[in-house]
Length: 146
Image (cartoon, rainbow, N blue to C red; front, side):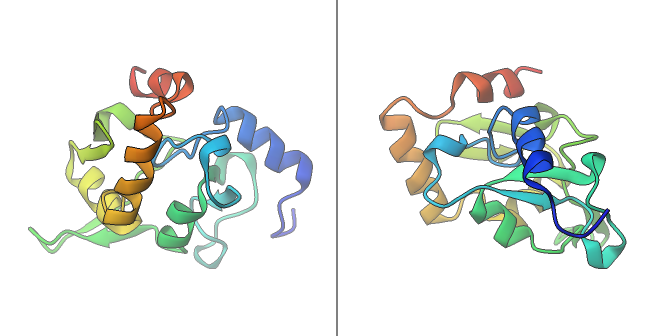
């Protein structure tokens, strides 16, 4: 398969994710920018444009993640892989506290830091969505409760 994601595959990935960013759980209808298909393992690291390696992501999470597959723990100096929406369960690594996304694990903390979940602009976006009853959506609540 080519490195480009077809429109059909993009739509299938979006439907699988209930049109949520699979990292921060914002709904596509509420995004300020178009949502994107993320290569969980980037092409430069040998990932492929295949169903099992793709996640639906808001532009903010996708831009911050870039081609990263992990980070270094500030506490231990050890490599931590990032949250993988295909193999990890969101609620085991994160907890929603209003608009804030709190990490429950070291991997969750590394992912939250790299993706900037709780940067001031991201919090402002989610606070605004909370105020109008759009965060978390019913689809996001289903992910949180899995």
